[in-house]
Amino acid sequence: MRAVSLWRKQFSTSTSKLQIFDRQRKRAQRDRAAWCTPAHDPLLHSVAQNLLDRLQDCKKTFPTALCLGGSLQLITRSLSSPPANGGVEKLFVMDASFDMVQACKNAYRPSPGNAVQTQFLVADEEFLPIKESSVDLVVSCLGLHWTNDLPGAMIQSRLALKPDGLFLAAILGGETLKELRIACTLAQMEREGGISPRVSPLAQALKTELRSTFALHFQVRDAGNLLTRAGFTLPGVDVDEYIVKYESAGDKFLKGRFLSISCAALELIEHLRAMGETNALFDMNNILKRDTALATAAIYDSMFSSDDGTVPATFQVIYMTGWREHSSQQKAKRRGSATISFKDIQKQFGSQS
Image (cartoon, rainbow, N blue to C red; front, side):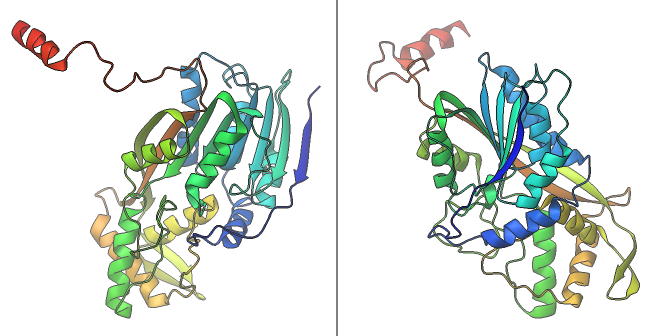
């Protein structure tokens, strides 16, 4: 019997000691994005598909799965479509935004003969209302990079997993929107004589303080360290870069009149709003001067425009894979237990070459 339900978990509004992101603001942005996200976004579709492709490399099945924030509709649709869904029989769909969960529930259309039980709940990723050792799979597609305590959120995800359970996550890396960062920095220095944080420090929740205006680069090794720190075994990390191109010329309606300007940066901002990925820094300047916005658009076009009339925006996505410890998993040998020297191997193969 198929079950689809929606319930709201009352979670604490208190935040972690590390104050980088305003979670209330992010919830409001997600509420707005719930009704603005297009039916088919090539970027979100590609990231979600590449993340779930990792399930095809696993021989085991995952009867109970938890989807955390981010691209809820795409992940829910894929995990509700057997047989290519990893054997999911029961699915929990969770987000901090009530409107996003409601929109996902409204768009949910189970296929005929689909026996996947689906429950929708509203809760914060920083305070998982999930019983320990209760799910086989945790998936987060472009959601965890907005948490103030990323290691803590990952630890909670590991605790929610059963032994030999799988954790899959995709987060935005520090190279994301590098073109916009450069253009915005130059525009603010030119028009305002200084810079203020306009682009969120992506994937920097592991830092103890915000030491620069824009993101410190989040490397692959940092993601691996996060997985290890959270207690996952057999960690795996890889990175992809997606280039989204926007039209660079046209008329834009701004403050009651049409302006003939390069509008690639403005089109990019509209795209970020539709995805719920706009700035949510806790200490951010809420006022962006009109002259600074226009200068940013002009600099963006002059520095990065292509011959085909488009302007690129880079989205760096870091994919993370980890397992909860189980006795059947491979384990590294004790240090010093090797019986063959690498020097002997090098001499043997070196002589053959």
